[in-house]
Image (cartoon, rainbow, N blue to C red; front, side, top):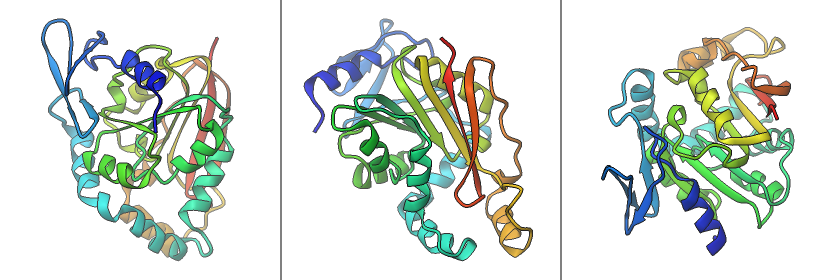
Length: 261
């Protein structure tokens, strides 16, 4: 259960994704000063900008909406085929172990999918920490509501136009999707903006490590997801203490840094 104080904090950081104006809650609607409104459905604010999605954002959003009910099952079946002995929970626990999260932290997870990583994040931020999860896919948010952290605040939104005030979070985590955003660098700029100075900023995606062998597994993965062939987004000068890790048995990378003070 979320506390009254956390709910008040969550309401206070919500912003119009287009203008970054404050929003007022009126029942199941969030309204900005000129009357523009955004619905709240099943407790999830829908704060998407632009309203009409094009390019890679639109294409992959449709893909993940359709895939959402089967996403976790597919990972559990295919993972051990690609990397014998692997499983998603071991991979997510390893990723969480590389994040310097502390009890009481206010954490934003961008693109949580079905929420598999959230129990490991909750272990680190504890019961007094606040977890907000934003995804562009309504289908994934529905799965996250069923299977993720039940105390998390869910938001329907676009990572490239985060609907939050500056300096809202102690930490931000994103994994899986940035390779296929319309503008990955814009998303990272947004990641940094909403984190407090000195706070943790982390993102990652699929990407072969040099140690991952060539062969049928690599060819199969490239056919299934062209994100493996996309270049990694550049690290902005607004971050320091940056480290890059190989994760998921050489199938992914994770960048961890801190916002400059």
